[in-house]
Image (tube, rainbow, N blue to C red; front, side):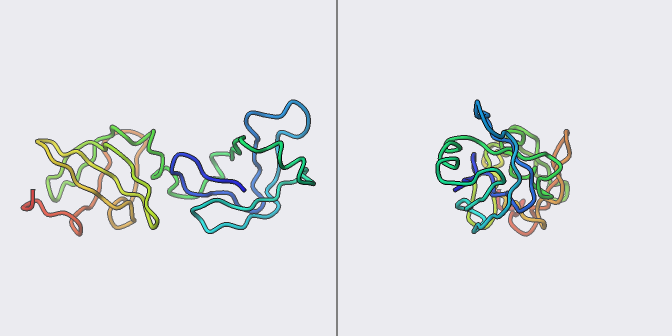
Length: 153
């Protein structure tokens, strides 16, 4: 069973090359996902090339499987709380400004906790209608109009 870490979504799929970390002293360090059955949240039952029995599979327990950045699904950066926390968040239309305080994992989507300038906070669902892009640096533009009212502050 492969389980996502740090609240990240499951990303493994058939054909992906994975690296085992820390690598075993003997045996393969790179494998290809041969099959992957998942519900998208709780983990996945994964079969890897070169792992041909329960004894070989047990040796991977407690290790991480890393994939190439290019193989991550589109929008994966929206879930990277370590990279996102502390970033400025702005909604120009509402005049909303704040800092991303926390990324909460939810069953349907993540939720950003944004600490507002001047006090208070707002919870923003990480969905396409609210967060369409996360630039490498600078403020993250959001459209909170469907979830937040400037008069309600």
